[in-house]
Image 1 (tube, rainbow, N blue to C red):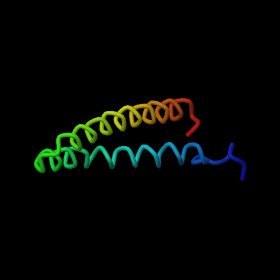
Image 2: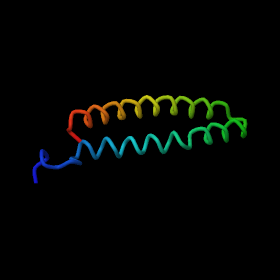
Image 3: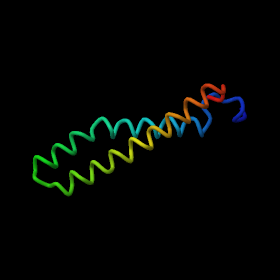
Length: 75
């Protein structure tokens, strides 16, 4: 089977996989931030807030590409 025949080719699989990983982190990010603040570690909390913002940006990029591929019939 060629990649043209595959609905979930490697690229599409990787998009879905990475989006899933980003969303999983975002699901838990607020807990990491809250736990850090509760422990009085503001440096750690700030780092988790930065990572959360970056992961959100990455998730948005992946989502946009996924939507584009679906609309183009390439998914």
